[in-house]
Length: 237
Figure (cartoon, rainbow, N blue to C red):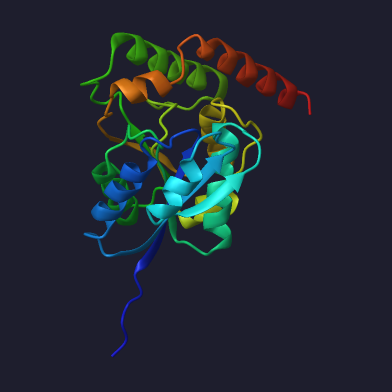
């Protein structure tokens, strides 16, 4: 009697100086996915951390990829997803290394993607803003509006770090920016490839630690500048 193989899922966690919390993030992901019927691997991309992030992640049982230099969130995410693709995983997820995302939402996203025909599933914090400050709500909503204006993509939370990728997305999806602006550029590239993009509601877990680590709303100006310059440059290529 043949046995259906389990879906292979890579749980990618980009991390920069998260030594204080990365072990607990890994343990919670592990405990959650052990309850699901998946063959999973937690992949931590240590993006040039100056603390003990890599050692703590290894001790907690994650597969660790180390960047010698800090490349930015977009660069670390690209490394993790490239590893997932090259290693033959069926699905990959990304979630933040500061504990902001509930592992149950990550698992639910994988289950949602398996049920449908979506290629890129985004966990949206703005479908239910409970726990988010007005400043963060306005900042993320504003960047989502800019993403729509520049690229014609309607999503509620373009900056979410919790994303689920199909096999097709892992095979095809690439981007050029390495900072936080990659979140919007990824959606643009997915649209260019005719990949199906959808959202599902998630909750954001904000602690004093994650609030201190989060990006400043003033950084949105730099993100917009970068996206605008890239959009204009490619219009003339």
